[in-house]
Amino acid sequence: MQVHRAFHLKLSAISATIATHHYRLPHMDSQHPFALLTPDTVLDAVESLGFLSDARTLTLNSYENRVFQIGIEGAQPLIAKFYRPDRWSDEAILEEHAYSLELAERDIPVIPPMQIEGRTLFEFAGFRFSLFKRFGGRAPELDNPDHLLMLGRLVGRLHAVGAMRPFEHRPSLTVQSFGHDSLTWLRESGVIPENLRPAYFSVADDLMQVIEQRMQSVPFKTVRMHGDLHVGNLLWRDESLYMVDMDDCRQGPAIQDLWMMLSGDHNQRQGQLAELVEGYNEFHDFDPRQLALIESLRTLRLVHYSAWLARRWDDPAFPRHFPWFASERYWADQVLTLREQRAALDEPLLRLF
View 1 (cartoon, one colour):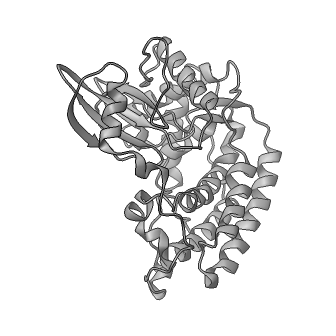
View 2 (cartoon, rainbow, N blue to C red):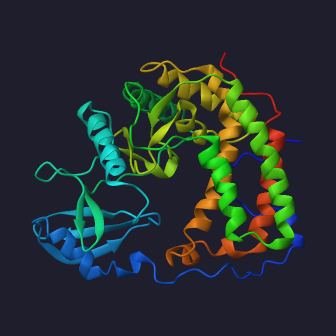
């Protein structure tokens, strides 16, 4: 049976027999720090750096942080990014900024933070924030071989720089951080309905054992990678591809920045991979042994995503934009998805010819 490949979570047929009512999640503190980030605070923060706002603000679709487009008198609007309190240390944020600036200096198309008097990270009213130039574009066409070839070149250039030295303050993508730590949070938070906990943790724990063995059996080098390189973090503009949102950059295997571009059946993904790797190899050598990590990394992302939502549930933006997370149907679908992933780990690997 062909295993469903799409990462984006979809409601499955098995869930049709389960009620879609919402159950009550564990009580969270409703006074989230972002509640203090008022429109006036946002404007005052930007103006504290010497800009004169025209008072026009547009909230952009960002939930991990808070991101706004700010109108500026006599100039193009700016993008203000306010970092989630207590997620990253100053050192980790500055290392992300330094990486973006290093890439930009090498003419690799990224959107780095603005430097103002030599600084990229600022503080106002207890919030850390950065400014970026507004940059528009559209999503690339991942069914277009030319776009895939260009994307492979872009990621190859990124990793050629990323392989020069490791991060010092950014985390690494590991089975522990994305897998075991996520499952520990899900167990202790009580977000999974009691009637689905045995099924979910049974398959999840089995997967972690298999993934541990797989990751240990495949030798690979890590690079400074984007970490969250999906189509939503790519912009096509002026016949070029740009990467945006380096907020999740970390140390990890190179294939992490490639596998999310693959979709469809085995043959379709095989063709997409060939285009990506052809472009990638023009700038950095791709290690084909990492192809054995794709389904492990996909599984870790699925588990980490659920834990991410659970960790953020005290932020009012999350119940508002992800209401399905508080339904039994979501978790029933997760059980099915993880079972499919268990089968996927035993399927033939993608190959380079």
